[in-house]
Amino acid sequence: MKLEGQRFGRLVVQAPAGSKDTYRWWQCRCDCGGLAVVRSRSLRTGRTRSCGCLRRESVARARTFRRERSHYIPSPCALADLMRGRLTP
Ligand SMILES: [Zn+2]
Image 1 (tube, rainbow, N blue to C red):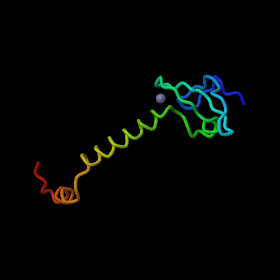
Image 2: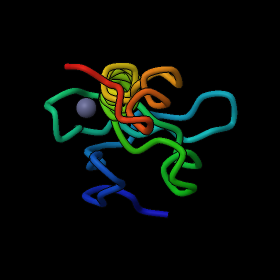
Image 3: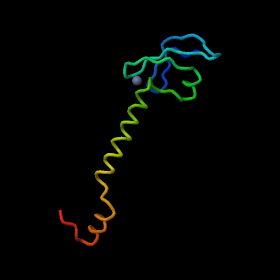
Image 4: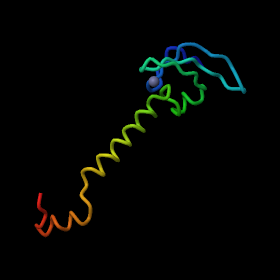
């Protein structure tokens, strides 16, 4: 199967990177500018869709989300006070 020039997520396949462990490997260029060598099966199944930056970003997003949650969601006590109309700013 010819994969050169094909896009998988953020990766565009550039050139074959040889075979190893009975798998075919491909050199890919990522949208972020990074390079990745990916197994063809990982590309076809959608397992690998970036040089790793996608994973890094989603981890960063998850951290931001947790921080926002702990910041914006009031504690049960504060919520109870709010419902009783006793919350003073
Ligand atoms: Zn990348």
